[in-house]
Image 1 (tube, rainbow, N blue to C red):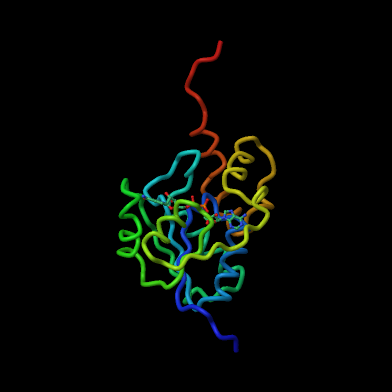
Image 2 (image 1 turned 60 degrees about the vertical axis):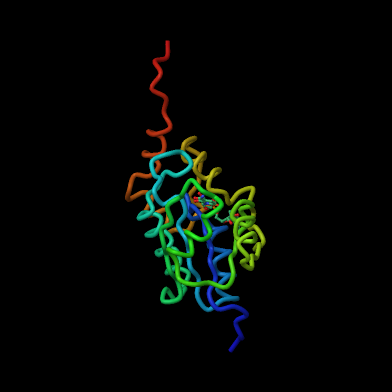
Length: 180
Ligand code: NAD
């Protein structure tokens, strides 16, 4: 049996949508910690280009994708975290919402900076083909009608089809200007 180096880790993201880079990172995190807290950031936002899916939809997507990977979900906490206007107190606010953790995993520069300033141990996991596995690229592909399904877990594809997610994204990014 391997010895875990940490107890509980925190991984925060918007997961718009969860893609194979996120899943790769989560599997690696679970090799290091006994439990992982997945913070669903910008939980109050949906129906925008940057954040098309609701926090509830993102929870369903992550849960289904991790279950398909055979991950023991009793070791995973999925917790929505709405944004606040004050970066300075954001870390303190996050600690109000999630169970205690000993290490934060992130590649987001602001998230990293805020947790380091607050005195937390921060690890930056290697990025997995970031030029392809990127929420922004996947959303743009959906809008353009380009293939995107191979970039996300199969369970996520299924949920996005069920909620007409591609149609939603296309509709909300249309302009209402009259063209002549
Ligand atoms: P994201 O879903 O884009 O990324 C989540 C994590 O996955 C990041 O660490 C990112 O670097 C990593 N990642 C992305 N592509 C990857 C790949 N191919 N391989 C491996 N890892 C990859 O989410 P995000 O935008 O980083 O989420 C940060 C959240 O924190 C946002 O919701 C933001 O609003 C929130 N936040 C809020 C405040 C505040 O409310 N004041 C302050 C700071 C951050």
